[in-house]
Length: 212
Image (cartoon, rainbow, N blue to C red; front, side):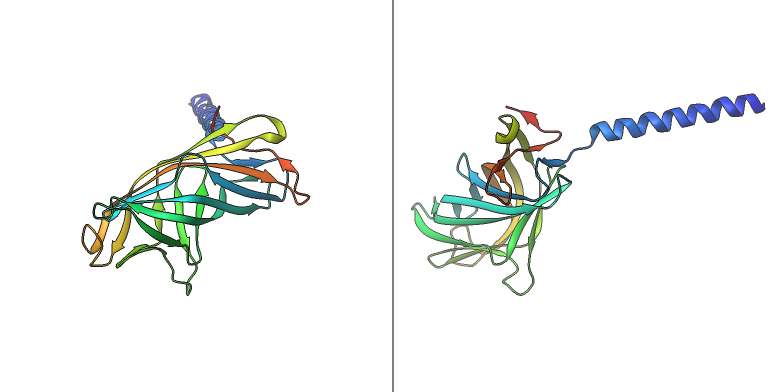
């Protein structure tokens, strides 16, 4: 009987060890060649936010952030949008502005992105067009993929947004009406590049991402 318990105990130890190895193999991290990395991003395919009032897109979408570790499970980046328009805005195209108001994106290695906002600075993203204000409050955004580009110090990360189900509110005179909606979709790609404090290009990659 004692021998059977010993065998059973060894089996549990082996199973636990194998599960730990599997969990380690399945883990994903953001990696960088430099401990202090300045991260910048530019849109590849146009980033669009499709809402009841129309589709917002900007000629310039830039992102910036900083990593202080060579291995991290999350990265915070702040976007800046300029040259924005809303198409299909009541059968026309109008000029719009997109203000972050202290909000930023927290990218996680699982593909979830958290929209977080600093209290007291508006606490939400606001897209403004003639007679129409659209507000996107803090929330979790899903369906973000990571692809690794190039090799060595030129390694970059491409983020692909295919994110439906975004919650937002529209003012009453917006096309599509006023109220709270849950059908917003963010699409597009962003290419993220890393530099060290000497403005030298350093490789960054997503540990579990695919390679292109």
